[in-house]
Amino acid sequence: MKLSAAIIPAAGFGTRMNIDHPKQYHLLAGIPILVRTIRAFLKNSHIDRIVVVVPADWIKETSRIFEHYNINIDELTLVAGGKRRQDSVKAGLQELGEDIDVILVHDGARPLVSQQTINKCFAAALRDGAAIAAIPVKDTLKKVTDGIILSTVDRTSLWQAQTPQAVKKDLLELAYLHNGNEDVTDEATLLEKAAIPVTIVEGNESNIKITRPEDMELATAILDQNQPPALRIGHGYDAHRFAKNRKLVLGGITIPYDLGLAGHSDADVLTHALCDAILGALGERDIGFHFPDSDNTYDSIYSITLLEHVIERATKQAYGISNCDITIICQKPRLAPHLNKMKNLLAKTCKVDSNAVNIKATTTEKMGFTGREEGISCHAVVLLQSSGDKK
Image (spheres, rainbow, N blue to C red):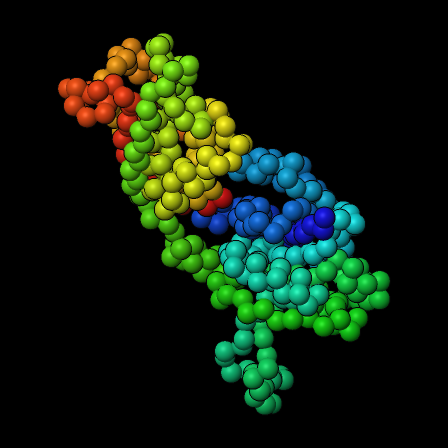
């Protein structure tokens, strides 16, 4: 099976930023620029491998930074770069095997690239062989010598190159074979010199490259504009009927009782309601959509495992639980002695303090299906809070 890879050249220093460290490690809204760039490709479904090319004396520090920001270093390959951009890209290229079909090269200092732009470049390279993201030039251009305008340049056919620049691996290798020693500013130029056609994919104005201090101000403003809502509320509800020869599992805790709950998984009605509340707050449908009972993968699965997956989805969207309030409706058995254990396990799974989780148990005074002891139902309300740090 053919796979795709991203090469992130980030081996330069960025002298125009006037800082004492490589610009790709500079903090943008509290997070290193390179970390933001890497996260964009880690979350893209088309990318199977990522090679990050950094200064040789920054490899160890880069690993430490990635681990600090919860980037799994095992999902990446870190290599030392060269003096020129093309040398760094070549170093990354040499790390990729024959199973790689399409390569996307993206500047380490372009942290605001969108998933749509990555997807469009990938599709165009798959279709045409090579493609780059670019935006049409909007401003009037002047040709100048010694501070004097010589002429106005026709901008009709002019585009401003961005990244990603996507290409079939064999075409990029061919371009390096023929012109790899010539100085070029990007992969598209290398391909042009080898007479390999490159398709233009319209990019996005916000996909800026951090080059000067004022670019940091613009990038910060773009991030502020694109921040998700600070708070989101979700409600979840679930119900399961009692069944013989089943364990009664609630909130991940096995409750001593002569009946359990019927279901495809462990039928943990409490954890299911909590999962639904979190998914609802994220606007991502419900637990049945993500973990269907038609999939044998989830047969008898421990529902705390499902909750872990849901929490991971929330984390990737920069949300964590502020607090949750859960009400179990159950005539029998008596649940009060078990609520603390449930609370502590759910808090641990959701990565919050135990005081952020509240669990109540009540009866319906023998009214309805729960009152007739036919089953158990549960309501959960969750408040999610944004960290402003999308994974």
